[in-house]
Structures are given as structure tokens and as C-alpha cells.
Image 1 (tube, rainbow, N blue to C red):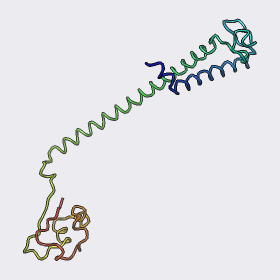
Image 2 (image 1 turned 45 degrees about the horizontal axis):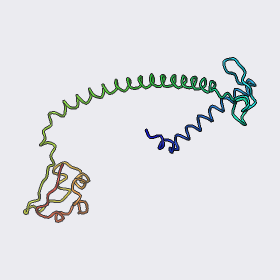
Image 3 (image 1 turned 90 degrees about the vertical axis):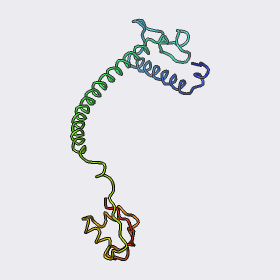
Image 4 (image 1 turned 120 degrees about the horizontal axis):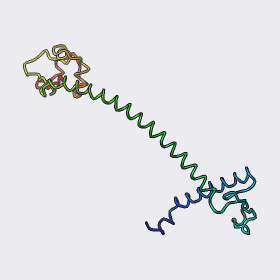
Length: 179
């Protein structure tokens, strides 16, 4: 990885600032609660740069032990949360797997039922008005073949605006889809 590119990345600087703010917050809270910071049981001087601290910031442990301790506790907490989430997710996935097994068996049953349907049964069926037919209207075709007029209009959009009862509305050679 190119270090120069990385140093120009704003996300890196945001992460550094957040880590510093968290560390400073933890140290400030410890200072407020106990009145001092400690390193391995020793009280660290709180007089700024002269005592090994940061200039202008008194009472901060610059060795990083407080930050490391806090990060350890925080990462342990995150690990517990991830473990709980993993267990929950695993349980949920098992439940879905069981339900999918039931769906899969139902689909297999449907496959068996549909396997007897031939491809010809699924093709559209048409009728054509012959030139000698005089009593052909949309309603008579619907009645003869047992289809609702609205379904005929849906299957034949070009016939949607013609009269359902006028036998002259359908010209000879008109092809009507029935299915």
C-alpha cells in the first residue's frame, strides 16, 4: 500500500481523530472518577509536560495503558455481541432451511402434476371469421367458446373498441385469440 496515498485519505484522519477522542474521553472520565491516573499501581504525575504528560493537558497517562485496557474491554464486548449475533443468525438460517425443505417438496408435487400437460395445451388458440359468416359478433364468439367478453378483449387488444353485439363489426378474416 502506498503510504502517501494513505496519508491523503480523509477516512484515516477521521479514524485517528475518533481514536484520540475516545482515548482522551476514557482518560478524562478516569481522572474525574478517581482523581488521578495510574500505571501499574503507580500514580502518574499530573503536571503536564514536565511530568511526562502532554503539554497543556494535565492528568493524562501517555503510556497508553488506559487506552489499551479500554480497547481490550471494548473488543471483548464486540466479540460477545458478534458471537450472539452468529448464534441468532445460525438459528434463523436453520428455521428458513426447514421451511424451504417443505416448499421444495411442494414444488416437486406441483412438477408431477404439471408434467402431464403437453406443450400444445399451452399454445394460444385462435378462431378466424370466414367470409360467409354473418352472425359473428364478439358476444356470440364469447358465448360459443365459453369465454367472458372482457377476457376476449384482454387477449385481443385490437378488438377492445368494437361493439360486442354488432355482427358487422368483425370483418371476414378477423383472427380472434381464445386462450
